[in-house]
Structure formats: C-alpha cells, structure tokens
Image (tube, one colour):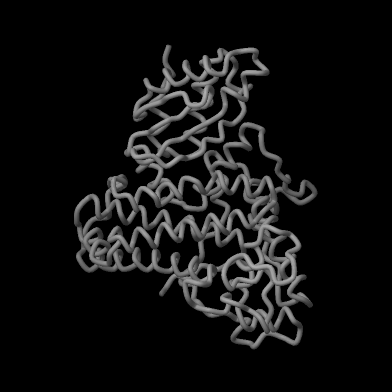
Amino acid sequence: MALDGSDRWWRSAGATPRRVDALLRSAVAAAAECPLESVPPAEPRRVASAGGAQYSTALPLRLAGSLGVSASGVAETAAALLRGVARVDGARVQRGGFVALDVASEARAAMVHTAAADGAAFLGDYLGYLRGLGRLDVTEPDRAAPADERASAAPLPPPSPLHGAATAEEARRLAREDARRRMRALAGHPGAEADGACIAVQPGDVSWREPCIDSGGGDTPAGRLLAVIGEAGARVAFCRAAAERPRAGEETGPGLPAVPTAEHPGAWALGTRANPAFVLRYAHAHAVSSLRWAGEAQAAAATAAAPALAPVPLEEPAAAALAGALYDGPLVLHAARRRSEPHMLVRYLEGVAAAYHEWRGSGGLAVEAAVESAGGGSAPALGRMRLCAAAAGVLHAGLSLLGVPAPTRL
C-alpha cells in the first residue's frame, strides 16, 4: 500500500505546515482505513533534531478511541506509508502513538521559497487550510453590503487610533482588540491556496518616524505615553503580556512594564536591543535593506534575476534554526487566533527576529554575500537571499497584524 501521488506534496509549496499536515492526515487515514474527511487536522509540531527538523503528530492517539483501533498499530502503518513518500527521510513511532516525520532538506528549502514569495500568504496559509476543512470559525463578510463593495473592502480592519484613548489602560485594551480583530479577519477571506495574501504590502519606504512623538502627544495619559515611546512601541508593549489585566508594576521582561506610562516607560523608550519593539522593526529593516542592496548590485552588474529555486543552505545550524522558526509561524498564528492571545504572536515574532539576528551574525547574511548573490554569484548565496526575504515577509505580516508599521531602511 502506498500514498498515491505523494510527490505532489512537496513540488509546489514545500514542507509548509499545511503540506505536512495534509500528508500526515492522508497517511493516518489510509492506515486507519477511514475516510480522509473524517480525520481532524494533524497539527504537526516541529521538534529540533540533529538532522535539522522533525515533525510530530498525536493523530493516531486522537483517533484510536473513536475508531476502536490500536493507536500504536495505526501509527506503525502510517509511518511505513510515509517512508515510501518522495523527499521523506524517515518516519517512526514514538511514545506508543505519536508519528514523527523527517523530511529532506529540499522540501524545507522549498518552504523557505514559499515564505519568500509572499510572507503574508505563508503566515495565513494554515488558517486557509483549516477553513477549507471546515475546522475554523470565521466571521463572514457583511451580507447586507453590495457584492462589489464586499469584494473591494479592506481585508484587515484599520487599527484604532490609540491617541484618542484617555488612559494607558484604555489604549492597551484597544491595541489588544485590534490585534485580535485583525487575526480573526485574516481567516475571513477564502482563497485557492492561502488566505494570508489579504495583508497589503507596504507602499514604498516606511520610515522610523513616529507622528505621536513628533507632535508631542496630547494632554491625556495615553497621549503623553505615545509621545515618549511612540505608537509602534505601545502596541507591542500592550500586546506582549499574557495577562489581560496585569497587576500593578507587572513586567513582561527586564525593564518592560506591562502597562508603561509616560513617567515610567521602562525600556520601551529605548532604541536598543532591550526594547522588543525596536528589535522586531530593526530586524525587518535590516532584512529589507539587505535585499535592496542586493538588487542595486544586480542592477549595476546587469545580471539575470536569481533562479527561482536557488538552494537554501540549511545545513548551517543558524540557517536551519531560522527556517524552523519560520515554519512555526502559521501554527502559532492559528493558536493565537483560537485562544485570542496576541502575546503569542508577539513572542513568536521575537523568536524570528532573534533567529534572524543570530543567522546574520554567524555570517549567514553578510553584505558581501548579498552583493555576490545579486551579481551572479554562487547558488548558496542566492539561497541565503531567499531566506532573508522569507524572514522579512513573515516579520512584515506579523507586525501588520499588530498594527505596527515595519521600517524599510536602517
């Protein structure tokens, strides 16, 4: 017994959460001899391994009771089926009913190319997959509006004006609800492959300037706070805490008050690595700037465009870690949306930014590599730029969901 057409799982999008989930569901359905449509999402979690990445699901355990079958037996059969799939390096049973899957590096590299092509679509792809399975609650567009008006409506609701809040606590509530509404709206637009494409691409350059800081804020506590840390910093600060109503003086990190004030802004007022809002926006600006430098070098050298599938050197530990962090995004977004907890998205983006900085700091993305790739250099250098583009796209999409503009220059 084999999975029909198994090679198609990786040919287009690579080992994205959507594709890995679909492959695991197909294998478990065949092993359990039940209809595919009756099998719930596999929710494949990534586990770091010596080989680069491993994806695990408890799907056999979840089905065993309802089907009256042996979880370990279903898992063993599913693992055997998966071992016959193209670009699968291995599959095994763990803890009596978990199926662990290893995929080839080219499948993971193809995932990077998918994220590089459209970071927003990649980040929202798993939500679109769940919607297609009927496993996602979404708010339908307003049926009273004309069809052409519904089609042309902005896909994400605009953020609330925080400067209109009277207190920091009210501004915090608005920022968190903005993030929740935008995460919910992301899954409300059906698409053929990915719902995430409804996030608009920023037009032209986006600067670091903060209108609230430039104008001096206002007379209210919220206005004075925005004049000190800016709206971008405030949105990240307000969404970073897990608690809906933080205790007085509660912090989300060293020097990071959960509800900063103009008198006590903590590290949120700093333009250093101590400020998560700065780190996130700097990572995006650095990645976009590197891509722009590469493009300028390419134009100067009058070379052909980079090959569409330049290999991404994922054998480098820092590159593999960054690719793994990117893989986690669609699953984290689904969990944050389902639980209505924007702090999960903030912490995920911080992880991507940290992985990006670690990768570039290890030599994975030097300016010389960017210029080499644009000037017709080696295929690995071209692949490094794909990883850079993937990080930039995912950071931009995540910041957009928080209502935070992503600067494009250092």
